[in-house]
Image (cartoon, rainbow, N blue to C red; front, side):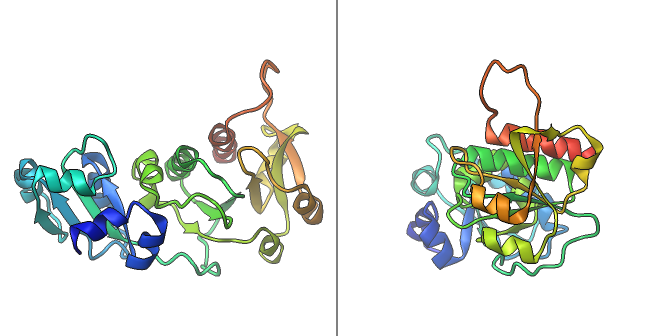
Length: 247
């Protein structure tokens, strides 16, 4: 792949066209190496490094293609202001098939039009930490392969099953019981919070559309707080709920 093409991978439309996304930095590349040993879809990975990383990469036990470039070239393709000098081009997984068979006991987290890359990356990190969660993303959500999301996930992007472009109205054909957050709901630390098929979380500003909640006959739950502020950050809310489902 040409360096100019790698630069284009900063944009979603070119990631879709070229079929790759970027993983940058030593920590993320090490996480990628570990994930590639157990995830068969992580193949045909191209690792671009500056001369400073030549010896480091020579010690890696990997089948990745390694291409050495200079610092100016690395600065050209990097998404960060101060590149570490190591960047991988990773094939996009096939995530369009929403009929994928889930694992035994796997829980489903649905995000409706989440927009903030940091929020999505943090949520992925939490789902990977606790394990056995599948993430469903609606259309018009931030791309999980956006470089900012990938960095914020700290490598969790390699471990969490993701389904893209899952329409809200299609959920009823897959699940029977839905839960969502609302200030007037039951407490999330009640036992019944664990008895749902799918957990709905909405856009940072607008939440989940009310008509969908009514159509699904979804049950409301709340995270109790001091009352000093009106709301929690989306990622914080999801993280608390995921913890509650995992204890």
